[in-house]
Image 1 (cartoon, rainbow, N blue to C red):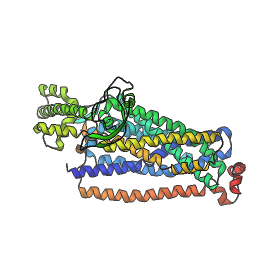
Image 2: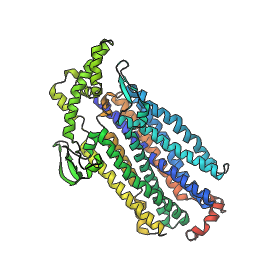
Image 3: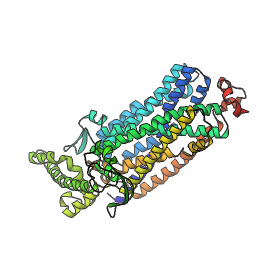
Image 4: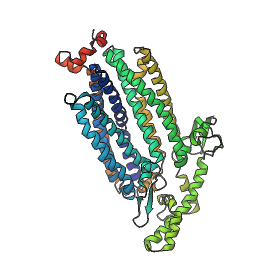
Length: 527
């Protein structure tokens, strides 16, 4: 496989995934915030809450459409750009994606139309049920997609069949309840809730700074403050759980994001800042916080945390075992009834993927020299500086979100919504959750390299037989198309925000019930 084809295929998928993930978090969070807002309307029967729900529902709809469009393209790339990957693990990886389409996507697609056009045709409780089903479908989509992604990070419940030369499901419940998948789901969803809360908080702050729609903005800000505080605290707690899940399943990723070159004796310290060097294989000017890494990774103070050098030595041993598995597999291919070859393969089958790593350097892994094996063992180390800094940016923004929403909650509780310095902070903070989420995605996907499926299939073996010209054509085409769609979406969002929540009443020149009920709250702004 041409390395340029592999790199360009990775680039194309990364661009598509990162672009798609601009829309997913806002959709996840806004869907349940709409449920909260509409529940308030159903319980209080105050029309202002119906207006609030419809306004934020409009912004949800604009974002939802772009998320669906980009998500479909991303899933097609598994067949177009990663055909051998799809062939090799499709029996397992395809099942959660199929369930996501049949269960979650159809669920939200069915109810989303009723949510937008059923306000005057459904009862209050009936419409609330529809909104809840949209939120449920949206979050179920994330669940099944992250189950598929979690399996790539920790391939449980599956086994390689030497007769079909493919991975097959052996325990679907293990795939479903994969600890990595569950940790990724709750962490990702809670990050989406934070993203939506910051968006609502920031837009509400914009209205308050301009003195417009004050009653609407104060109510929206109050919901965002409470929802965001709970979500931001959850992100940190669940992020800690994700770190703990790495201890047993992705030790190299954990060591790399901490730039831990050698095993840290108990209680392991956390490197707060430093300058990791892949060339020197050490971290310069590191500042450590004692005990913290041990508590995060092992939940104890008496267990060490393995470092990169020791994990590379383990990888070297597994590569040698993988060569034996590869040789036995070749024997099975020559004579499927050979009991000796099958016995040897069964002993070493778990290391076959490590043997396949050698195919990046030599056509037949059995011809690898000891020096090549040692070199390939270091291929299992991802880019340490990238992981080190993406994690710290993500974690730093997460801590800032707690401070932001904690302040918002206090100010809203004291009815000091118009504190101008905080309104400016809330407005300027709108992009930060997206930065943290994108960095988190880079950390998750970059951190498992060189594996498409951890310990099973190297990334370079999963790509399709495409040409460099074909890949550049589609990359440029997608970039131009999606760039245009991004401009369209941002302009639509800004246009809807500029019109405000009461634009329909303004258009027809007569106050609707919502505006009339809200008039006392927004009278100063109107005046």
